[in-house]
Length: 234
Image (cartoon, rainbow, N blue to C red; front, top):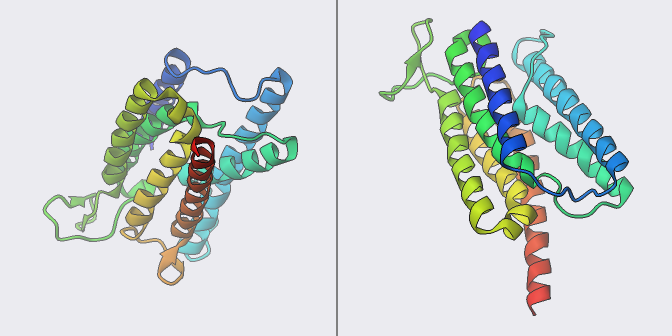
């Protein structure tokens, strides 16, 4: 697990540096006290979602064993749920997550390399495959390196987000967060089909269902922004 923790630390440092050094903004929430409440709620959602949903997935997939875990998908889901409820209660409209996107993308990309290097112990490996790039993590089984699939997808979106930030700042601020969630949820849903987790309904595991919820969330907000822009243009 030491190698995984090392890559987690690297991902936090890189993501934090990018967020501080390059991707700054005047936050949508102007009131400083309200902004700190927002950050507190967001962090609480991250932690509860990460640990809670990962532990629940372990329970469902490991014959009822209660093993604490952490999941970036769970963290995103919890953070979104908590922040959206907070924004609704406070009457805050619009995207507040745009400037987190490049850091999230690069952080996930680096962190997944740590998951890959941790091997079977991390329980993020894929199912058996006959494809030539399958990886044997020490048990004699050639498996899909789903961790690297996700890492490459996130490196790709990091590049897209930087490009959007440079060429279309207004569009970046309005829609990049929802585009990121859509991209992340779609690719993660595909990789979930290549993992040995226990399905809970229709062959889809817990994380797969969470991905479908996030896809619906992202499409809903992207559709809303599209309708608003069309009405303004007309």
